[in-house]
Image (cartoon, rainbow, N blue to C red):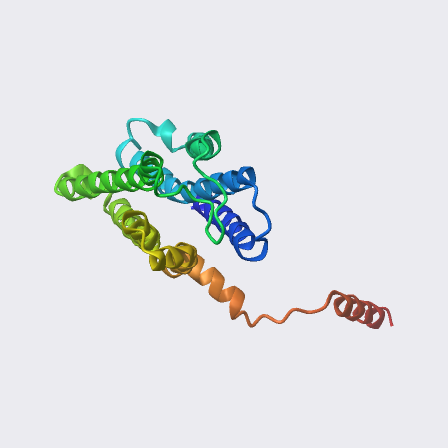
Length: 256
C-alpha cells in the first residue's frame, strides 16, 4: 500500500507539472522538452496501475504460497517486487523519447497523437490493459480458490485469513475501478477524437487519484481511525516553555 501511495504522489506531481506547462508556460515549445514531459506523464500513469499489480502478486503469495514457499512472504521478497515495479515503470514509456511521435502541439498535453496508431495502441496496452487484466485474473483466481477451498477442513481453519483476503480483494477492486473510471474519457478521446472527452480526461484521472485516496482512508479501519484522531483530537498540547516553568515552580515549592 505504501508503494501505491508513493506512485500516486509521483503521478500528482508529474501531472501538476504538465498542467503548469500547458496553462502557464505556453512559450515552451521545444519538442524535446515535450517528449520528456510525455515520458514522465506515461511513467506516472504506469506507476499507479502497476503498483496495484504488485499488490495483487503479494496477495497471491500470501494466499497460495504461504505454506510451500514461506520465503515469498518476507520483506526482502517484497523489496525486490517494488524494485522490479519501478524498473519496469521507467522502461515501459521509453518509446516516448526514443521515437519522435510526441512533439509540441499548442493547447494540448504532450501525449502520443492519435495518428500514430501503433504507438497509441502500445500505450493503451502497456499502461492499462496488461496491469488491469493481470490484476483481474489474479484476484479471480484467489477468490475462486477461497470459495472452493472453504469446504475443506484445512482451509476452514484459516477462515479469518480468507475473510481478510476477500476484504482486501473488495477494497482493491473498488480502488482499481476508480482508476479505470478516471481513464474512460481519455479512452473515448483516443477512439473517437472527441475534444470534450480530451478536456474531461485532463481532469478525471487526477480527480480519480484524489477520490481513490479518500476511499483508501474510508475503507481501511485503522487508517480511518488514525486520521479521525488527528483531525478531531481533543488532547491539549502544552507549550514546552510552560512545561519547564511549571516544573521549576514545583521543584522550588518542594525545596521550600
